[in-house]
Each structure stands twice: as structure tokens, then as C-alpha cells.
Length: 93
Image (cartoon, rainbow, N blue to C red):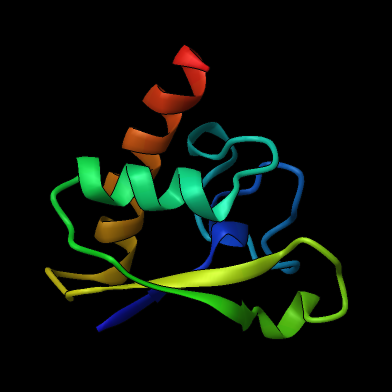
């Protein structure tokens, strides 16, 4: 299983702050629900853990939640796939 946090896709964060995709693949202020929707559209069946907090931002309000997805290749490939779906969803918003 791979752990996916919304912060991985946050264009407002630096790599050292937790972003794991490129700036061009990131969106501003992704929510857990948007990441869940993007993961489903990418062909994954996410397990949702809403109460978990990312270790780097455990103290920030409104930043809880993560998803778990089956590992289908390298994590970077999975993240890029979800980021693509997230970006499409973000443009329609």
C-alpha cells in the first residue's frame, strides 16, 4: 500500500515542506476529498483515513487526512497519475 497525502499535490508548498510532484503538476490548496476523487478517476480504490495528520503539518488546522492505494509501480508514477486527474478536476472547478 502507498500512503498519499494532499500536501503532496500542494503548489503552495516547497519540496522540503512536503510537496512531491512538480509545480506544474500541483494545484493550490488540494483537499482530501479532491485527492480521493482524483485517485478514483485514476483507477485506484483508495482507503480513506480522515483523522491522520502529516508529520510535517500535524499542528495546522484543516489539514488532516490521507488515502492508501494499492502499489502499482513506483510511487512517483502513481502520484503523477493522480496529479493529472487532480489537475483536470481543478480546471473544471
